[in-house]
Length: 374
Image 1 (cartoon, rainbow, N blue to C red):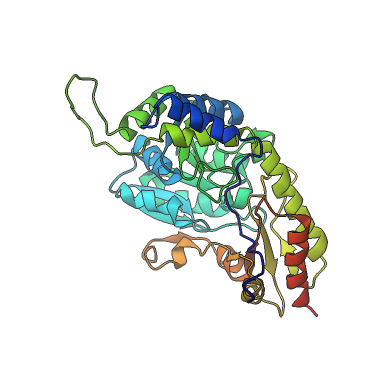
Image 2: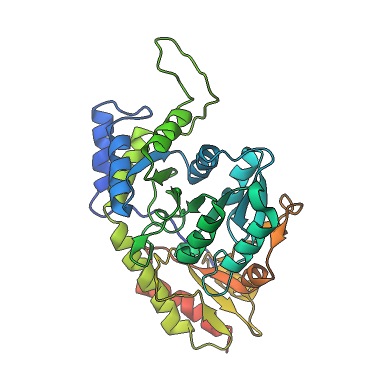
């Protein structure tokens, strides 16, 4: 690798050209609202909820914290089972353990790359009343098949929590992901489609539950003159400065989705004809945010060949998430399904999807990949 080659990132923070974020940050500094909470937090909650069509929201330090408090809200605890997709990042599954509940991992289907409704129903039949919640993920900005999943969960009387960390701006049949279940979770980590540097949001149409989450996330401090705590608390509340970044980023979310779509379609056009190459599915009921462009390979060229070739040119790419049931920490827990998630992991590669990329960058990436077929 030559040192003078410009680094191309998988997905990195991208602030607005208009400087929206700095205006809110400067206001926080000018008014000395730099400590946790403040006007930016309140407004970011309102603006995000309005954007996705949810009634209420709680701004938190991470999407992981949001999943944790959603699970706490539905009462998941020791002896309970939470059904979770196996093809996801560990941040989806870890909060189940925080609550001393037991994860059971569900396979994906090829149609959506998300939770397989058939495997989900098999798990519900197997575990019955022990299932306290179903965690659904919208992987890489692709919507899960929410009609089927919600119908199954309704039949069994199990609440749904949507991990929409990767899918802010994604629609399922004209409705934002994260607004179908009892709770929706969004992440503003540095690599997400918009970022607050770090942070998350929990949304719900149930005001009392969101109020309780805000209470827990500020150390469960009772209304009293002295410091009094009647419940276990958590330090999960978003700061006013961070929320200011989020308010600015939210203004350009639609622009970011458009650029992500452009990147995906560029790859499809330039690489889709190569032998053995396919791309993540795009169903007619799904309008993705294309957070990451992911291709699969079935042929002589393997994902590691692509990743090493790109790495040699100072270009970042990554494997598809390694399924949770294959992870050392989670290996002891049950898994329901076949080998779809394993096949996606073994054959998939996440291509650079940074919204700051130029056509020249995209041409460079595609040229490196095409050379593997020559």
